[in-house]
Image 1 (cartoon, rainbow, N blue to C red):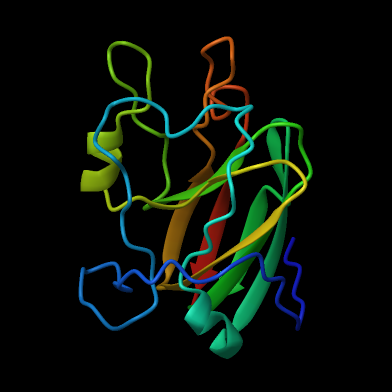
Image 2 (cartoon, rainbow, N blue to C red):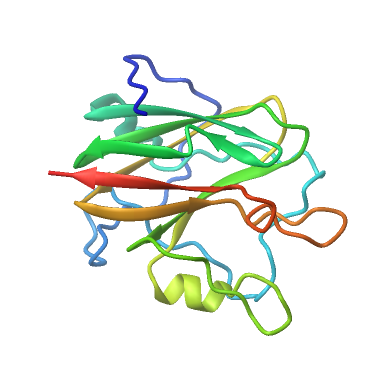
Length: 178
């Protein structure tokens, strides 16, 4: 299911980071990896983190806008198909916990360490990139240039019980055609 809209929901200023394509070349608008390499999930589920938009300066020229609702513990829609190009993901955190939208190029399952945490080093090596976790009731945007292929979308925020949102079913897929 694809939801297209022709407005942009803003929630702050651009992060100012360089934009990289999936081959690492500066200048296009695809997501650059932002994993920490710490071997632990990116944020607590209840901290009320602030929205930190990604590549907001590109949103006005986006070819497509995709609205995704993040709840406890799912994305709606969980499966998206979109044409290649510059895409703004408009995320509505309708849950009661922090949520993020992370992308794993090539699709597949998120790798975990022997200790049971998402393997941030392996994710970074695979070219994963993300819209960092942000709190309930917020809308946050990320704009990327995505080439053809499959992407797993997921949230690896950790609950108070130590489970990740990914483990609780918060994952889906994006198919980019073109």
